[in-house]
Length: 351
Image (cartoon, rainbow, N blue to C red; front, top):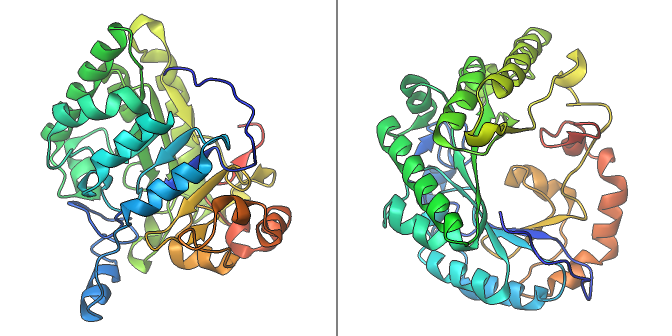
């Protein structure tokens, strides 16, 4: 990945912003997805209420990026809910990244809709810091049973194409973006995490990261690896297997696959992921909902709204929200909120 130039921001602001561009658009139905799981009522409720799909106005992204110029903004992430490559203004997002010198950090389900893997890769790779591909198994059966609608052979071919374009671009002196497999840790795939690392090494995928399940629906609560001491013990065994796999299965030139958020848990993790874990987002990153609402983190939407209302970016500037007393107070007191206490995304200081 090309190093970003050092700078002294003229004013405070996030180093990365996630724009929820099109959360209601997706071509898969992953079982754990807040909006598109077969267990989710989101889309049926929207249709019953005759509500339009949530799709961000590109003018809002343009406004926020323009206002953030000189603030230290280094990356943006298009929607991690839904499939961002279905957003009709995605090409303009790429152009805005190039215009403002901001890197694109993409999370995609690996289907590369509309253009296909090669055409998308040729557009994305030059401006991307990281392309994170949702990946939930080391076998066809597991992957397709979790990411409903996915085709194992096609997504494997797509990853190979992405890596080929990435490597060719870097060899010609251009940007080398990182490629990541991103998992949701589940009872149904925990035994395959070491296999995902082996597959990543074979394909040239740089990193394997993930997070524990947000159990949005009662039907998937039995899949959480934090639900009981017995599940935590199985998780810890998988972590040790993952560490062994990293040593045994190497990338070209002997590099290790990078692991992120794959660490052992104490039995008490049913309530709190780790006693010394801190929020990696507050004061660092920002989220913008499709309607312009500022959100402080990536927690499920109904839950993060309980942290307070901080403003809408179509009405005020990100700088004003970022420096507001309400947001500063949240940074100081977040562990008083039950959502933050039990959050899957907090990171131990030593991890």
